[in-house]
Length: 493
Image: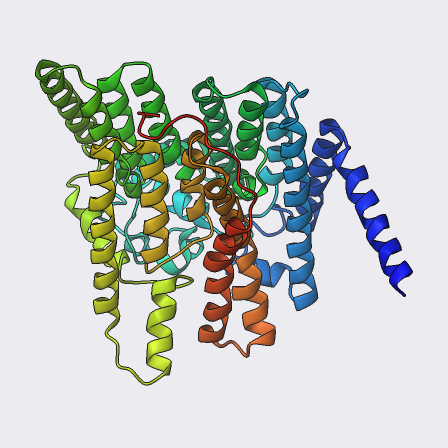
């Protein structure tokens, strides 16, 4: 019996060693096959105009099918991790062009795959029609104001809500809707392509900003972004606008690193004008630039130019849509409505199940206060020399933990900053990667497990899902092998 066990272990180690020797082109080819499979499994064309829009649980309507989807995603993630290990080898030298070419090929089948994990791009299209067809502001007018619109049923649960996005995004959505006219499928493909373009553009910015890293580390970290299955599903498949929010932040940071501080700060302001959560990291970069200034005159110039330029950009962006107060009111409303899949939501549900009459708004407000105190502490640390890159990752992570509503694409906000933080050690990056994995797999827990195994009990699914999404990455990161940090903390990078 022990001999058989040793034999199986030896065979497994030999198999692992064989797989680890696969060349990068083979790993890329196998990954492409995986994306083609999902395109044929969940094609866009048969489902794009169905009401109600199908979810992953309806497209794969059994526990076995859900587990099959999870296995598919884990295999893709495994191939992605093997590719990173190959790129990290000292003798490997992969160019940005080769990494982007593969990422582009991965994106193509996802453009023609139904967005099975989120249907936000339908709301982009419907709100774009509010701007283009009806000449109204989606920041102040909900889709229900136009009951005769043929695409109104596609707005889903948010049909009675105004837009929670910034005016810059609504301008981009209006441009896509104007070009696609009444062709819904073309509009969806354009939104997907726009998001995929942001994903590739961020890959290029990361390459530029990692110029101080060793060649193998540079290629590996850019690959960790460009080939990440969770990101490709979020952008090329889901068409989410979070990519453009991140692009403006990274573009601004790249300009700051080149000494163009005012232009960098103004570019960063485009992030919250795309998606308001992009406002969170701005103060950290402002403080870091302020500290870098050689004298008071430079600081005054930076303050005046960046403030004037930022206000001008905000005024230009909001001018077609009216007052920003409508957006502020919408965000305040969203902060306490439509919660779920989060630690805060789990706490409220568990307390009520145990018989405690916990006011939901009180818990949400308490979580927001704790988040505000942590943000102030991060600002204080940044003022005393902490890297704004690390603070940006931390403030986004804190937001994810305390938010009443969690969505599987939120963890994408952390990864660029974790990749740029060469001095932060490997465990932080490992936690971010595991969070991307667990968040994507959570749809099986909240969908298939909830529907077929847990008697549609929300508390049980949240207890399992929140533990899986938020706790497992921390456990896996704690077990991750530690690599020595480079340099000393406290630099602008």
